[in-house]
Image 1: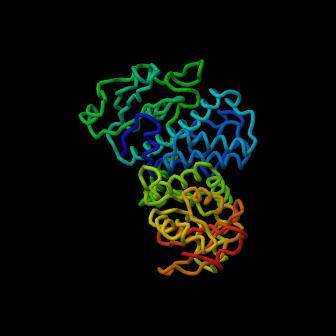
Image 2: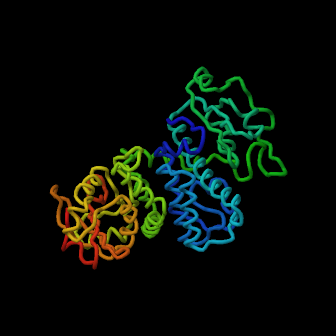
Image 3: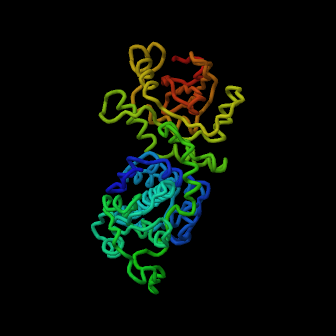
Length: 429
């Protein structure tokens, strides 16, 4: 099992399948709310909310912005950029924190970290149950402003998994709580993990504080174990996934109703960070910037409506729903070699492809002017063109349907200058 990170961003850099399975299990239930406590305790295990967000399309956009942070390791800054774009696009006003710079920073940080910590905890809970450990060990997370109970009463506690303590205090048990739990098979192992098997809970540890309505050490509405109510489902679902790098865009989405999958796919590709990441990915491959080059990057789920449009064009019978659109390093290498030179493109009435062009892909996929058949690849796979006119130029993006990996992958792209037209008529691969 992954070790507890020292900060939320540590978890983000190492998302694990149970964490993503838990969060995506909530995407089929986007709950409109007015106040933060409109959902209580375990209701958060099966529903997604952002306090004050009531419109379905707004909730869809917010859900996918959060999903990217959890499944793809996006930073707080990237989430804030997406959040600002969503708020502006929907004209959402009146939300708590809107009026000041500090308030906006606090609100976005709260949404980001709360969803990170609860999904992480839920994934860990499922792992701990599955691990069949004799003891669970409570560890303080090292907060700069620690809660008395968490640091001085709970830290180091070693209790069996069925102890009622965990039903109330499995962390996080308040806003910003960074405490965590590890499993041990013996008291000796628990000591190695920082536990103290001799430590006991004080009398009255679960007594209700009449001022808060919950025991001391838990925040209001935080007196529950995130993910406990769905742990068997989360674990069973996570076990179905192998080779997670190839499933980021589509894993665990089969339980989401079709109409909602369409909305979530559209929301994903509308996020500024998706376009930014496609551009940065191409720049790294082009050698214009440094950084790790992943073998593949997702461009989001193929929604049911898009799947049907593609099937109609290629006259295929095999469904492609629950595929994703994707970019792969070797395919972008081909695009650069085939269409990255002005000397070869100008005679074709085209201009050289540059990394910034890849930022247009989410828009091209989401709202193409045309989807056209493009024949077969040399490997016998079906090809399809997405054609879109942008800024006086015509983009033609050719995708291959790779059924083995359940993805619709970009294989080439070129840009025609001057008047637009069909991509199929002038295709260059």
